[in-house]
Length: 402
Ligand code: HEC
Image (cartoon, rainbow, N blue to C red; front, top):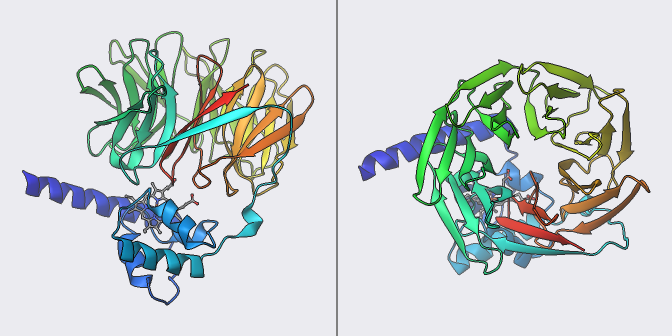
């Protein structure tokens, strides 16, 4: 049994690392020096070493140690050799510092480091009982955090599921997109039992519940949009434009879809699943995520162009604003809270949290304290605060807005 599990794990790691390599190209060779072998052997099991050379780097070995201690536990001597090697060869790229904008809004950011190292914590949500949940994609788990006490508990999901996103239902069940085993799954936290619904699309990605009770989801690689009726298990999947990504339900029930493979935004009818497409100017545009305001305006990040934008669905008119840190700031996750826009500049280190006030068309921004990682998805709590995370440094966070 143990052998079989080890074998399966081996196959899955192999598949995964070839996936990473295929996705990210051949890693640039590591520079010579003491520590090179250790980095080669210990730091390429979850991601390729290109993840290291592409990062913004740190000039101090302490900062390097702090970052990778959230990924892997190593004996002191090894950790120091690696940290010295990295600080020497991969110092801070200062051009990646965000342009932070001062302002008069006060926020407080609380972050928690989640238990399993290197799990790629992401996509936090608030459950009906006020607990915070996240998904640990690379460890195929989901976790529950009590924000009052800081107590965390992790729940194992099927080992090949690699849950990308989670959403809660009204009973407090946690639904996840099984990005690697082509499923939508449901965890009942009371019993720990998991129910899986098999999808045709190979990689369910982001998901959103609709007031009609259905769960709508995107499958990025498969270029599919899906609808699951959680009560009957009825599943409908349709083909769509390349790389559908973020998905949100508008105030009138329209299901809005962001595209990461084309310069489009989709409006899907919840019943017919017919999609109307809007084009954002410039074919280089890629939209990872979007959100709706109370007027039904669609706010989106233009990740590739370093902008945020607003689409008026009535007229099709689009207006865009440059993000404070410029064209390489890579705005990523976005939420609308009381008609104010919150998003992050994921291309910068530290990852910057940005607030945009549509009335005054003004920005304010803050550095995320943990410093390294990427916010890939955010969630608005009942109290109107923002849940964030950092996928590299294993953080889940709460932004309390004054
Ligand atoms: C158990 C898995 C695991 C191991 C082992 C691991 N990492 Fe990571 N690492 C991660 C995850 C998860 C991310 C985030 C990837 C993402 O968001 O796509 C990451 C991202 C990174 C980043 C990018 C940071 C940024 O700017 O966002 C660097 C640099 C990095 N790792 C360095 C290392 C080093 C150095 C080692 C070896 C000492 C190591 N990693 C070993 C899981 C791991």
